[in-house]
Length: 221
Ligand SMILES: [Zn+2]
Ligand SMILES: [Zn+2]
Ligand SMILES: [Zn+2]
Image 1 (cartoon, rainbow, N blue to C red):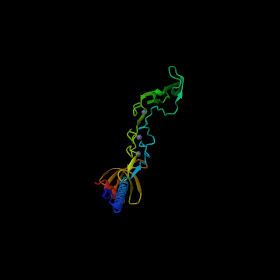
Image 2 (cartoon, rainbow, N blue to C red):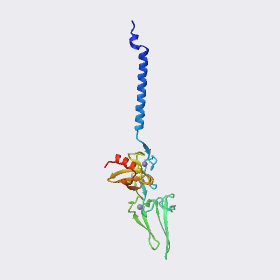
Image 3 (cartoon, protein in one colour):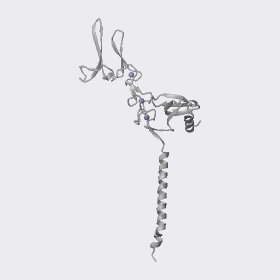
Image 4 (cartoon, helix red, strand yellow):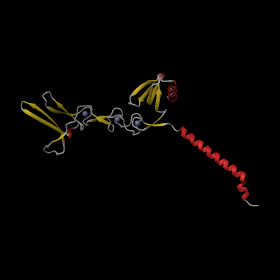
């Protein structure tokens, strides 16, 4: 009598074991496929293309050029000028006007960026000092991103979950609207349209049956 007989159990048991393993693998495979299909449908943010930064065209790291009349690095007319006590490569904005006394010139260097130069009716250029809207920085915070430089559609995440944040809504005429639902109050949705990042109020009862039902499921009253 040997012990091997008890351990292998003969060909019938082997076949059973193989079948069991196959079933197990198949089961795992289904489980895995199930997890895959349950994954949320993630879309790359159409506004920032996944870059996460503010998509406003004039936004530079959360700042935009001051709307005031201050001197800016981007102003036209900066030029080099030889001035005692200043470096030769410094840039200047020069103003020239004429009076009975002759021709006058005043110039301000880039050290005066953010200050307002006003031209009086006589043609004389005077410095009014620090610009008010920008406090003398020549930049103000970008309105859409409030100076954060975060994409306003995806809040700086780079992607959006379809049916959670990102929606393609159809109205009863079959027109489509793509964007993000921020919130729901009664019959209205606060919606940010992806194409131009405009904030819209969308009436829920103007949507088609399917869209309305899905929104109501996600944003119950
Ligand atoms: Zn984005
Ligand atoms: Zn300014
Ligand atoms: Zn911005």
